[in-house]
Each structure stands twice: as C-alpha cells, then as structure tokens.
Length: 184
Image (tube, rainbow, N blue to C red; front, side, top):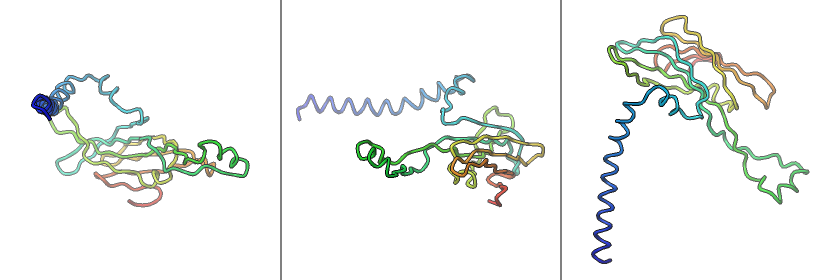
C-alpha cells in the first residue's frame, strides 16, 4: 500500500467517524422542530390503528392508556400440495412457504410528567391471548369510564374456523391486564 492510499484511507475513516458523531445531533435538532404532520407521517404503515384514552396512576407516575395494532409477518405455512397442484408446483416456485401477515395488539402505559409537554412510554405489553392466534386483522374499541382501568375489545375474523373472534382486555396498573380468557 502506498502513502497516498494510506492517507486516503485515514481521511475516509476520520470522515466516517465525524459523520457518526454529527448525525445524531442533526437528527435531534430536526426532531425538535417537527410539527404534527411530520410526526404523523413518521408512523410506519404497519400500524393501522392506535387508540388512546383513560388515565392511570402508579405512585407519583401517571398518564394514559394506549392500544396499538401492529401488522407483522406470520409464521410461514406450507402451501397445499394436493395431487392437482403438485404438477404445477414442480414447475413453479409454489413449494416455498407462504408468508402471511398477522395483526398483533399491544397495550402501552404512556406517562406524562407534571409541567412538561413531553410524554414517554412507561410500559408495553403484548396481548398474548390474541396475538398467539395469528389472525390477519385486529379492530379495537376502548372504554375508559373508570380511573386506573381501561377495557379494550379486540375483534377479528378467523378464516380457518370461519368465526368471529373477540377478546376483552381489562388493563389496570402498568404491565397488568386480564383477558376474557383468564389472568395474565
């Protein structure tokens, strides 16, 4: 390696380090100036539904409940290779596992500090009783008539059993919830 390529390599590595140090500063500056539409546009399309409401307190910390539906990849399933489709599958890519989407539901406890406009996620839990069903859709309805309690109705349709699915969730203190299927 000659002297010029060593110098070039050193300069490039120093520039890369400088860029790594500057990018977080620039990103935090632009985030501070973001308006509501910038924040809304930053939400990924994989979040089709968000509901917020009610209130909770836990000692000196308090805030609101939030329910979030997130679309993600389901476990891969193998295609149906009946006698008729085996011939087609032998000449096409149909033998690859089929990757479907699934809806997952999460409850979050969002905390608000007194005297400050900012909020932060205090606790997030997955609604295991619903998420394990690996359904393609989830629709939410929220009831927040009592302090320190939020009731969430999660509905979907199970194509495999041709049935409507409903899971009722009652969230209380951060991280704690009960479902119509039992206690978590």
